[in-house]
Amino acid sequence: MELLQLQYFLAVARLEHMTEAARSLHVTQSSLSKTIQRLEEDLGVPLFDRTGRKLRLNAFGSRFLHRAERALFELEQGRQELRDLSSPEQGAIKLAVTNASTLPQILRAFRKKHPHTPFHVQMLTTQEMVTLLHRGEVDYCLSSPPMQGEDIECQIVHIDPILAAVPKGHWLAGRSSVTLAELKDEWFVGVKRGYFTRDLVDSVCQSAGFALNYVYEGNEPARLSALVEAGIGIGFIPSTAMNSREQIHYLQIEDHELVREIALLWHGSRYISRAALEFREVVVDYFRAYQNEVGNR
Image 1 (cartoon, one colour):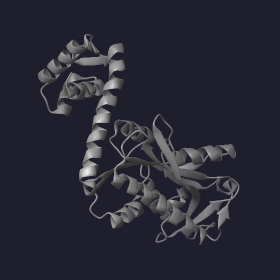
Image 2 (tube, helix red, strand yellow):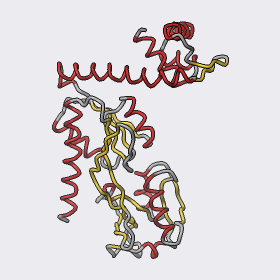
Image 3 (cartoon, one colour):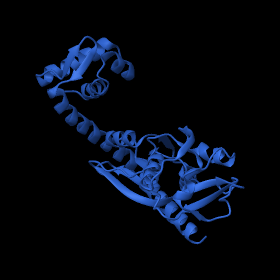
Image 4 (cartoon, one colour):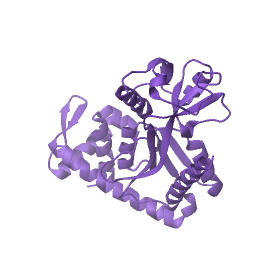
């Protein structure tokens, strides 16, 4: 059994389509097909049920997929560990996030300490992030809400209040807090259903006996502040997304606990490079300092 056979098998198993797998691997379809056939001959069983160019993992293939992923995962961990030991300054950080409101400040703090360490960031759904963690394709996920899963370590780094945001001149702009009942007749701007903050706010308002009247629903949380500032509607915005330069007034919610938990996730069985360990320290230190700053206001 060859390493190349395992790598090709994983690509075909994930895509279940020979042509697409060949394209992703940059090899010819005939070469890929022959490699998979040799692997099946070595194992003595078929791994796929075939219908034309489409394939489906059968019971043998499903069992073997778990083992193959584990074997390649361990080999990749060994490669990364040796690279880190020989050239610790060459480490790179791969990060996935569900929301980018705190990301610029965190990356700025990390770059100050490690100006030559490269990083790559993706914005993904929570399920996409967990998938990449299991594959070893990201070092950390900064997620709200926290996620649980096999081999997934989860550290809550911040409890983030969600505030009501109103434009300057709004009838609530002179107050520091508001009840949910006082907001039920307002027009709202928000993200679409499926975003954690939106779903949480809708759930809490439903428990209070009403539904919000949305005049705007979008896919970009960062755009909500501009819409509130323009007077299109009021919004619910996490405190970490506040911007003091905006013409917006923020109010705490008096009668309901409206908070989101921000968590740092990583794979518990994966080798963590020195650079990645130091990045974790930067994240924890950032939120600790942020919490102290908020507490001293």
